Every structure is written in C-alpha cells, then in structure tokens.
Amino acid sequence: MSLENDAQASGRPGAGAVLAAGMDVEAARRAKQRDLRPLGRLLPFVRAHAGDATLAGVFLLLSTSATAGLTFALRWMADRGIASHSPALIGRYFGVLAVVAVTLSLFTAARFFFITKLGERVVADLRAALYGHVVTLDQAYFLKIRTGEVLSRMTTDLTIVESMVGSTISIALRNFLSVIIALIIMVFVSPALTGFVALLALLILAPLFLVGRQVRRLSIRAQERFADAIGYAGETLDALDTVQAFGRERSATERFRSAVEAAFRTSLARITARAGMTGLVMILVMGGIGLILWRASLATFVDHTMTAGALLQFVLLSILAAGGVGSLGEAWGDVQKTSGAMARIAELLDAAPAIAAPAHPRALPTPATGAIVFDKVEFRYPGRPELPALNGFDLSVRPGERVALVGPSGAGKSTVFRLLLRFYDPTRGVVRLDGVNLTEADPADIRARIALVAQDAPLFSGSALDNLRFGREDAGADDIAAALRAAEADGFLSALPQGLDTALGERAKTLSGGQRQRVAIARALVRNAPILLLDEATSALDAENERLVQRALHDAMSGRTTLVIAHRLATVLKADRIVVMDEGVVVETGTHAELSARGGLYAKLAKLQFGMEAA
Image (tube, rainbow, N blue to C red; front, side, top):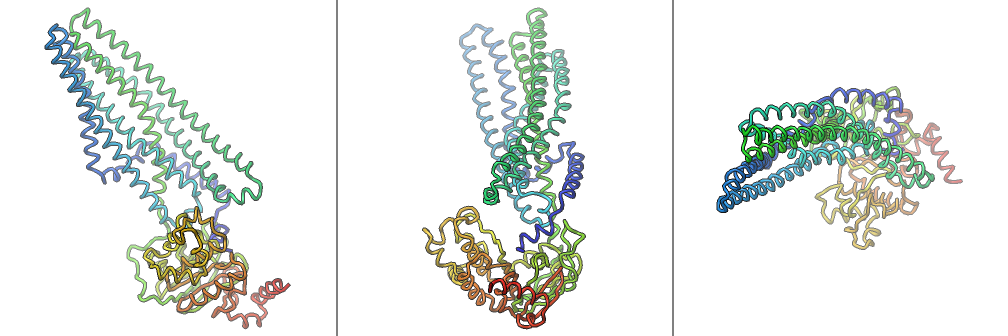
C-alpha cells in the first residue's frame, strides 16, 4: 500500500464520526458567529499598510467634507447669486460651485485609489498568509476537511473580503460621515427639522439590525453549501479518469448539480431577506424625504423662517443623510456576509498543527549519519484509535544500511515512513534520527535529511526543470544531469521540444506513468539527502526500465541509509536486511536466503509471488 493510500485507509474517520463531529463544529461555529469579531482579524493586515490606510482615511474625510461644502456653494449661489439678479455675482458663485465640484472629484478619485489599493493589498497578504499557514498543517487535519473546502475559503470567501475592504468599507464610512456631517449642518440650518430627521433615521436603522442578523446567518450557510459543491467538484475532477472509466459522468453531474442547487436555495433565501430589507429602507427613506420637503416648504413659503437657499441646502442635506442611511443598510448586509466569510477563514488561520517544532528544538548532529531507531513504537491513526497501525515496533538501521520493509497490506510499512518524516508522532515509544528524539527536533530539520519517492509521487505543473528543483532549489546543472542519468530519465526529457524547459502540464500528465516516476526518482536524488525512502518507487515501470532504474538506485543508495517498501520481492533481494512486518510488528528479520529457509511469513510470500511469476 502506498504512503498516500495507507494514510487514507488508516486515518479517515467513518461517516458517522464525521457527521457527529461536523454537528459539534457547526454548533460551536453558530455560537461564535453572533457578532462581528471575526472582522477584527483583518486589523493586523490593515496596520501593516498604515500609510495607505491613513491616506485613504484622509481623502475619505476630505471628499465627504467637500460633498457637504457643495451644499453651501448651492445655498450661496441661490441666496447671494441668483437672488441678487447680478450677472457678476451669479458668475462668481457659479465659479465657487465649480471649484468645489472639481475639488470633490479630485478627493473622491484619491479616496477610490487608496482604499482600493489597500483592499487589494490586504487581501493579497491575507491570501498568502492563509496559504502559508495551511501548508504547515499536519496530515491529521486534512482527514477532517476536504481540500475543495480549503480552496473555497481561499477563493470565494477571500473575494467577499476583498469586496468589503476595497469597496464596501469605504462606502459605509463615507455614508456614515455624510450622515454625521449632514446632521451637524442641518442643526444650524433648522434645529426643529433636524430633530424630525434624526427620529426618521432611528426608524430606518432599527429594521436593519433585525433583518441584518438573519442575512448574516443565511450568508454563512450559503457559503458553506457552496464550499460543499466545490469540494465535491475538486474530488471528481482530480479523479476524472476514474469517473469516466466507470461511466459515472451523469451521476457525478447530478450530485454536483444537487450541491449547487442547495447552495442556490440558501442564497435565494439570503437574497429574499436582503431584498426585503432594501425595499423597506427605500420606503422609509422616500417617505421621510417627502415629509421633510413638506415641512421645509411650509417653513420657507408660509412661515418665512428659511430662505430659498437654506431650503435648497436643507433638502440636499436631508437627501444626503437619508441616502447615507439607506446605503448603510445595504453595506450592513455586506458586512454581515463578510463577517461570515472571515469567520470561515479564521477557522483555518486558527487551526494549529499538531506536529510542530518545540519551543526550543534540539539540533540534529552534523554531519548527518542517517542512523534510525524505532524503540517500542506504538501508533494509532486519529480516525482509527481502536486499531494500532504499529504495536511495539522495534527497528534499528545503521548508517548507510539498506533495509527493505515487506509484508502484507496494512502491516504498517508506510506508517514507518510517516513517523520517520514526522507527519505524525508516536502514541507511545520513541523514534530517533542520529540519536535525537524526533519530537524534540524541528520537523523542517528532520525532513531536510530525507528524500522520498512514493508509489504515486505527484509532480506539479511547470517545466521538468521546475519539478527537479522542487527537490532542491539551489541544485546546479551538474547535479540535475547526474540525477537524471541515475534515474534513467535524461533520454526522454532531452527529447522534449524544449528539453528540461518544456511545460509538463497539470500534474505532468503529458508524461507516462513510468516517466513521471523516473522524474520523481530524479527529484529525490537531486535532494542529495543522507536518508532515502523508497515506497514502491519502481512500481510504475516496465520490466526493462525497472531493471535499469534498480541498477541506478543501487548506485544512488551507496553511502545513504535507505529504507525500501516493496510488494514485489524481486526488487529487495539485494537489500542488506529484510524486515518482515505483520499487524504493526516485526515478525522476521534477515536476508532473502535466510528468511526463505525459515519457512515463515516471508517464505510464504516469496513462494506465492515467485510461483505466480514463474507461472
């Protein structure tokens, strides 16, 4: 069983456990998401760009003030310009109006630039921080969450955050300041009418908070449903050849459509609530403006307590204030939606890897020797605590020794590799590398001394050279050429149109399985690590290529501590020692000849396999 498959088979929780855990997580999430505290996670990213944030705030204040100044310019034009019947004065105050309008345009453009730049910058930093954190999470975490859901949070949810930081927050702050400034000026123009406007504003704001909470809950639910759909799409597209081979295109499409429809129905409920809130706000705003116009008209033309210019200014300020309150209603809905998205992002940021460097990691000795010790190691995968994958496992590997791990599927062979790479820590017992307990060392230092070739070693989009340097970024041309020759990969790679610079496509699917495996072997050899782990490294090769690569690997193993997992026993005949495992323990140790002569588990496996091959 490969390293990847072993983890999936051993560690993935059952459907009932996942459902129960999901319900608990959901309940906890609902309890935490009754406020806007998740948005506070954005503050460190905003503070990192205090200059842009300050300039955005300054121009926001200036543009809002210029908007209020525009009402004064219109009042003066009416009372001092038009009322004077003087062409000179009319021209002068039209000029003042033009200057204020140009100033407002410039300040608004500057505000838009800096707030949009800030939003793009904050989201770019947040996206990078999120990805950087996700790749540090341990293997057990990804048994509880689908990759598609992680990608949904890094794309869809971050797009929602970007919209708020780069647009909604600016609009909301501008409208809030507009309401405050308009109300202050209105107090001086007409205190009585301003009190009426303030009462109206309270009547408009009250339903916003009542409906807004419902909008937020529905937004979170819609985002979760969409993440489910994306997660399923990611799984099926990743295994598209399997879907097509089993003729499951129609059922996969139907299942995805059902997930999308569930997301749509939840979104429709949110849209309905949002539309109802918007309609209610507009009715209240328009009705309020009508009442204000009526009272202001009486004050001007009946009571003569206001001038025509004051009436014009008050009406404009009222429209500005009422429009600001109405826009705040829509912005509040966006804030609620963003809070839900940020809560989901925060869950990823708050996820702490169970495997991490201790506060004061112990340094591995230099130079590395590659000595490995498993001392009474017991390990149980998180999703299968009742069944140990290793149960009192003991193994000591000398520096430079070549040891093969063989045994039936599920014996724990790949678990040995995972513990050595410190993807997991033992439940009991100790794993040592060069005399150092792995739990006392930094995982990065441990993995720097190990090169892995898995059965299904994934390659990445990019060129062949990019994939080779994934093993070691500073690898020189000579190192790469030597690794390619050792892996018998130089021939087919040099025949590509642009040689090593040829793009291999997503997951290098332009290469055959055997070619991908040889590139993976070359990538491991480029690493030049003192320990080499081979997990069915030649399983994808035909007999001729396997013979060539085995010969090359034999040379590559020289001077390195090598652990080999192989079901095909013919590939481990030249190992210094063969360790036979069954049910998480060592049952036999010796050379091929010694083990064959004992008549134990190895002899049975060898007889079965070689007999079948001979047949």
